[in-house]
Amino acid sequence: MRLPGFDPKRPPPGPFRAGFWRSPLRGRWLTALLGLILLIGIPILFITGLLSNVAYQPRLGANSLGTNLRPLDFYLFTWPTRPVWLYALTEGMHVTIGLTLIPVLLVKLWSVIPRLFEWPPVRSPAHLLERLSLALLVGSVLFEFGTGILDIQLYYPFSFSFVPAHYYGGWICIGAFGAHSALKLGTMRQGLRTRGEVMDGFSPGGPASLTAISPAPSTMSRRVLLGTVGAGSLILFLQGAGESLGGPFRFLSFLAPRGRAPSGPLGFPVNQTAAAAEVTSASVGPAWRLELVGARSLQLSREQLLMMPQHTYDLPIACVEGWSTTQRWTGVRLRDLAALAGVHDAATVESISIQTGSDFSAATLGSEQVADEQSLLALRVNGVDLSLDHGFPARVISPAVPGVHCTKWVTKMAFSPVRT
Ligand code: HEM
Image (tube, rainbow, N blue to C red):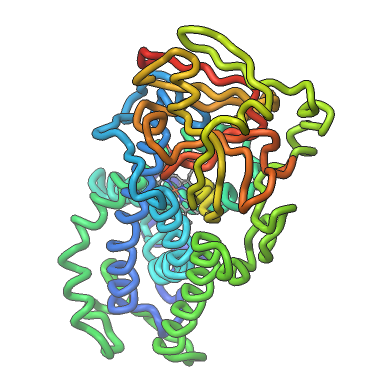
């Protein structure tokens, strides 16, 4: 296949020259080893990402992909309420493994850079297809890692919505990665056997080789390179694990956008402060009432809620951005409130906040959560009243759900006997 303007007699420009890439560290063994780590890690990221999507079933509202199923948006099972730390585990794994893989991914891409600058750039229609699939693979992997990292740092310089873009990007990424892995499995196995060999088994600079044609003097050994990757991954693993485990481990999370020390008025993190949500003490003063809507409607003051049977459980708030914190919550069971509203076996409850205009303004919980004895409208935490930043006068807390479903500053709860 002849490209317009391409003259096979002229030497290729810059990075397309065979001798341009000179690092003596490149070779199939290094690439195969890093590829093997990604082969284990990326499917785990995809599966834990899908689990996060399941935990956001459309009927649960708030931050899901939408209220109707869209292409590739399927749910094979209902998200359970046990173990109570389930979402903390799956989302903690997703974010922590993603962070841990960053150095591996970067060095893997560096190790194959010469292959991205092949000359001629296109040799045949099959070669063109192969290169397009590589562009899709590299582009989607960088997109997934890039958007994921920006999201956990709560920084949104892009104009699209993160959740659907990251979700559909995940499908493209796993598709391109699966096809690439299937094609390269044999090469990877051969490459792993070439450990310690300077050549990678192909003629240096040739189309299949990663070995430099005129290697520069080495400035470090492969062992030092791998040690540096390992140290970088370990540091990022500890940072992610510190945020996911919370409590005394949070000091490890030096990149946490909300800080390392347990912060907030009650010594645990606050994702969105009352000031940021424009909720003032005046809006939750003595005139505050909780409106219950079901087969009948009624209003309850905080004192009336405190007179109802109180229950205390240790439950995590597990944020979608990967941090978790377990606290001791006290309040009224959701199923007792449903009964007060005249709804037995409620299919859903929609909790509406005083806060307006954000993902946190309202959230829906399903029948499993409403029926669970540990699902509470919490009035107190760790033996004291909720602080305004933690959702005073009342907030939802429910086992194993993403933190965004634990609505703060609740003003209305609508129980429905019918699935929405
Ligand atoms: C450093 C790497 C990554 C980080 C930090 C990261 C972070 C995140 C976060 C914070 C969420 C939860 C979003 C939300 O529900 O608000 C998420 C969801 C998800 N991630 Fe990633 N991610 C990374 C890499 C990947 C990769 C490589 C894939 C695919 C192979 C992937 C696939 C998914 C999927 C499918 C979801 C579910 C989206 C939904 O809720 O519908 N992620 N990720």
